[in-house]
Image (cartoon, rainbow, N blue to C red; front, side):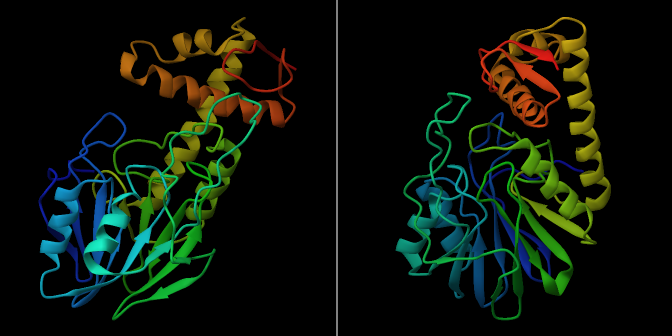
Length: 293
């Protein structure tokens, strides 16, 4: 996978797809959120990104002489959906796609659910296997919970391609962070995508994924190996998430320490639910002590 161009560069990716990357580079967004323009003349915009007026203006400029007829959102993390409201204000196009986020209350992990855009209000919700029919293109919604409970990917039927949002990215595996992120759902969704035969993925961050089946298989293997590593650390006497992170993620950048802890928490939540690991407080939390059951 090659490094994608910087934000602000409009790139033609296929006969029906153009990409414009938002200027929100960071440790969890790579070079920025990928916004996609689908179609020609009458178009849809997928994931207009964060609340960034400059990026929305660039999307409007990129479609000058065309009509944006739909604003489509994969999920409601704040680097993907808030720009939909700005783009709707500029164009009048309806917001279509994932359902509004329902905040998780009183989750056993004790974590607050803070990563979502709570002001997102779609004009139309697409369910699993629903199709948005555009002018010369068809986008089929596929439910892929895990990274976010309301996550959808969109298959571009005319090109055997798939907009994979943050479920499969072109530079890194997805963060799965409780309470809304769920490791068991994430793995099931990966298995569902692996069973498909898409020729290419256009991800929410990173460049084109040209052998998606192999990459998805690798992501499943990665999570299987991470689970084994966690069980291994518990078997060697680690009892806390902090100890497990220190043992597994040697030399980890301090900026990613919290994400690593949440990833381990997600795995432990799954292992506790499956009866393989037990927690001294009965549930998977960041402060609990764990042991193999």
